[in-house]
Length: 194
Image (cartoon, rainbow, N blue to C red):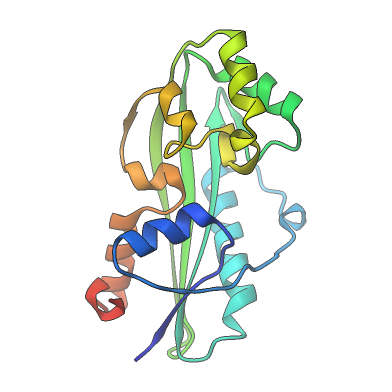
Protein backbone atom coordinates (compact mmCIF):
# COMPACT_ATOMS: atom_id res chain seq x y z
CA UNK A 1 0.00 0.00 0.00
CA UNK A 2 1.29 3.43 -0.93
CA UNK A 3 1.92 5.87 1.93
CA UNK A 4 0.28 9.29 2.21
CA UNK A 5 2.60 12.04 3.41
CA UNK A 6 1.60 15.55 4.46
CA UNK A 7 4.48 17.95 3.84
CA UNK A 8 3.21 20.46 6.38
CA UNK A 9 3.34 21.14 10.10
CA UNK A 10 -0.14 22.71 9.96
CA UNK A 11 -2.38 21.22 12.67
CA UNK A 12 -5.44 22.44 10.72
CA UNK A 13 -4.45 20.51 7.58
CA UNK A 14 -3.72 17.39 9.61
CA UNK A 15 -7.08 17.68 11.37
CA UNK A 16 -8.90 17.98 8.03
CA UNK A 17 -7.22 14.82 6.74
CA UNK A 18 -7.91 12.96 9.97
CA UNK A 19 -11.58 14.01 9.82
CA UNK A 20 -11.96 12.23 6.47
CA UNK A 21 -10.11 9.10 7.60
CA UNK A 22 -6.62 9.79 6.26
CA UNK A 23 -3.83 9.31 8.83
CA UNK A 24 -0.82 10.72 6.98
CA UNK A 25 2.84 10.62 7.82
CA UNK A 26 3.58 14.25 8.75
CA UNK A 27 6.87 15.82 7.79
CA UNK A 28 7.33 19.58 7.72
CA UNK A 29 9.27 20.70 4.67
CA UNK A 30 10.97 23.66 6.38
CA UNK A 31 11.28 25.15 2.89
CA UNK A 32 12.48 28.76 3.00
CA UNK A 33 9.52 30.63 1.48
CA UNK A 34 11.57 33.82 1.14
CA UNK A 35 13.38 32.16 -1.78
CA UNK A 36 10.24 32.54 -3.91
CA UNK A 37 9.34 36.05 -5.02
CA UNK A 38 6.33 35.98 -7.34
CA UNK A 39 3.62 38.60 -7.74
CA UNK A 40 0.91 36.41 -9.30
CA UNK A 41 -1.03 34.99 -6.36
CA UNK A 42 -1.97 31.67 -7.91
CA UNK A 43 1.53 31.10 -9.25
CA UNK A 44 2.95 31.95 -5.81
CA UNK A 45 0.87 29.44 -3.81
CA UNK A 46 1.27 26.73 -6.45
CA UNK A 47 5.06 27.18 -6.54
CA UNK A 48 5.36 27.18 -2.74
CA UNK A 49 3.13 24.09 -2.44
CA UNK A 50 5.26 22.28 -5.02
CA UNK A 51 8.56 23.25 -3.39
CA UNK A 52 7.29 22.04 -0.01
CA UNK A 53 6.16 18.72 -1.48
CA UNK A 54 9.40 18.26 -3.45
CA UNK A 55 11.52 18.93 -0.37
CA UNK A 56 9.79 16.11 1.51
CA UNK A 57 9.30 13.74 -1.44
CA UNK A 58 12.99 12.79 -1.53
CA UNK A 59 12.58 11.09 1.84
CA UNK A 60 9.58 8.96 0.84
CA UNK A 61 9.80 6.43 -1.99
CA UNK A 62 6.45 4.80 -2.84
CA UNK A 63 4.38 7.63 -1.40
CA UNK A 64 1.92 10.33 -2.30
CA UNK A 65 3.28 13.58 -0.89
CA UNK A 66 0.96 16.55 -0.46
CA UNK A 67 2.29 20.09 -0.11
CA UNK A 68 0.03 23.10 0.42
CA UNK A 69 0.40 26.84 0.78
CA UNK A 70 -2.23 29.49 1.48
CA UNK A 71 -2.38 33.26 1.17
CA UNK A 72 -5.14 35.81 1.34
CA UNK A 73 -5.51 38.59 -1.20
CA UNK A 74 -7.45 41.72 -0.26
CA UNK A 75 -7.46 44.93 -2.33
CA UNK A 76 -4.56 43.66 -4.43
CA UNK A 77 -2.37 42.91 -1.40
CA UNK A 78 -1.14 39.40 -0.60
CA UNK A 79 -1.21 38.39 3.06
CA UNK A 80 0.59 35.35 4.41
CA UNK A 81 1.10 34.80 8.14
CA UNK A 82 1.66 38.08 10.01
CA UNK A 83 5.09 38.52 11.57
CA UNK A 84 3.79 40.14 14.75
CA UNK A 85 0.60 41.36 16.48
CA UNK A 86 0.81 44.93 15.17
CA UNK A 87 0.87 43.65 11.57
CA UNK A 88 -2.14 41.42 12.30
CA UNK A 89 -4.05 44.38 13.79
CA UNK A 90 -3.20 46.56 10.81
CA UNK A 91 -4.32 43.84 8.39
CA UNK A 92 -7.62 43.35 10.18
CA UNK A 93 -8.26 47.09 10.11
CA UNK A 94 -7.71 46.97 6.34
CA UNK A 95 -9.77 43.79 5.79
CA UNK A 96 -12.85 44.52 7.88
CA UNK A 97 -16.00 44.99 5.86
CA UNK A 98 -14.24 43.81 2.70
CA UNK A 99 -14.08 40.71 0.56
CA UNK A 100 -10.85 38.79 0.11
CA UNK A 101 -9.85 35.72 -1.84
CA UNK A 102 -8.12 32.87 -0.06
CA UNK A 103 -5.79 30.98 -2.39
CA UNK A 104 -4.49 27.54 -1.47
CA UNK A 105 -1.98 25.83 -3.71
CA UNK A 106 -2.02 22.02 -3.64
CA UNK A 107 0.84 19.93 -5.01
CA UNK A 108 0.54 16.15 -5.02
CA UNK A 109 3.60 14.08 -5.94
CA UNK A 110 3.50 10.35 -6.62
CA UNK A 111 7.11 9.41 -5.85
CA UNK A 112 6.62 5.82 -7.03
CA UNK A 113 5.60 6.84 -10.56
CA UNK A 114 7.48 10.17 -10.69
CA UNK A 115 4.46 12.35 -11.47
CA UNK A 116 2.92 15.47 -9.97
CA UNK A 117 -0.31 17.46 -10.04
CA UNK A 118 -0.62 21.10 -9.01
CA UNK A 119 -3.97 22.78 -8.43
CA UNK A 120 -5.19 25.94 -6.74
CA UNK A 121 -8.37 26.39 -4.72
CA UNK A 122 -9.83 29.91 -4.48
CA UNK A 123 -12.53 30.88 -1.98
CA UNK A 124 -14.12 34.30 -1.42
CA UNK A 125 -14.12 35.44 2.21
CA UNK A 126 -16.45 38.21 3.44
CA UNK A 127 -15.04 39.90 6.54
CA UNK A 128 -17.32 41.40 9.18
CA UNK A 129 -17.01 45.11 9.83
CA UNK A 130 -15.70 44.73 13.38
CA UNK A 131 -14.46 47.51 15.67
CA UNK A 132 -10.86 48.13 16.76
CA UNK A 133 -11.46 46.70 20.21
CA UNK A 134 -12.65 43.37 18.77
CA UNK A 135 -9.66 43.28 16.43
CA UNK A 136 -7.19 43.92 19.24
CA UNK A 137 -8.83 41.34 21.51
CA UNK A 138 -8.83 38.74 18.74
CA UNK A 139 -5.18 39.35 17.87
CA UNK A 140 -4.25 39.13 21.58
CA UNK A 141 -5.43 35.48 21.56
CA UNK A 142 -2.46 34.67 19.31
CA UNK A 143 -4.62 32.75 16.85
CA UNK A 144 -4.18 35.19 13.92
CA UNK A 145 -0.39 34.96 14.13
CA UNK A 146 -0.47 31.32 13.02
CA UNK A 147 -2.63 31.76 9.93
CA UNK A 148 -2.45 33.08 6.39
CA UNK A 149 -4.59 36.20 6.28
CA UNK A 150 -4.49 36.61 10.08
CA UNK A 151 -7.58 34.53 10.82
CA UNK A 152 -8.64 30.94 11.44
CA UNK A 153 -12.08 30.12 10.07
CA UNK A 154 -12.21 27.00 12.25
CA UNK A 155 -11.36 28.99 15.38
CA UNK A 156 -12.30 32.29 16.98
CA UNK A 157 -11.78 34.01 13.63
CA UNK A 158 -14.88 32.26 12.31
CA UNK A 159 -16.93 34.67 14.41
CA UNK A 160 -15.69 37.56 12.27
CA UNK A 161 -16.41 36.05 8.85
CA UNK A 162 -19.87 36.91 7.51
CA UNK A 163 -19.83 34.34 4.73
CA UNK A 164 -17.68 32.47 2.28
CA UNK A 165 -18.31 31.56 -1.33
CA UNK A 166 -16.51 28.42 -2.40
CA UNK A 167 -14.83 25.57 -0.60
CA UNK A 168 -14.95 25.85 3.19
CA UNK A 169 -11.98 23.55 3.84
CA UNK A 170 -9.86 25.49 1.33
CA UNK A 171 -9.98 28.45 3.73
CA UNK A 172 -8.69 26.18 6.50
CA UNK A 173 -5.72 25.24 4.32
CA UNK A 174 -6.67 22.17 2.28
CA UNK A 175 -9.56 21.76 -0.15
CA UNK A 176 -10.91 18.27 0.48
CA UNK A 177 -12.90 18.16 -2.80
CA UNK A 178 -9.82 19.30 -4.72
CA UNK A 179 -7.70 16.63 -3.01
CA UNK A 180 -10.26 13.99 -3.99
CA UNK A 181 -10.15 15.00 -7.66
CA UNK A 182 -6.32 15.10 -7.62
CA UNK A 183 -6.22 11.58 -6.19
CA UNK A 184 -8.65 10.46 -8.89
CA UNK A 185 -6.37 11.94 -11.56
CA UNK A 186 -3.68 9.58 -10.23
CA UNK A 187 -6.24 6.71 -10.33
CA UNK A 188 -6.58 6.48 -6.56
CA UNK A 189 -9.69 6.69 -4.43
CA UNK A 190 -9.76 8.49 -1.09
CA UNK A 191 -10.79 5.17 0.44
CA UNK A 192 -7.36 3.74 -0.54
CA UNK A 193 -5.98 5.77 2.38
CA UNK A 194 -8.54 4.83 5.04
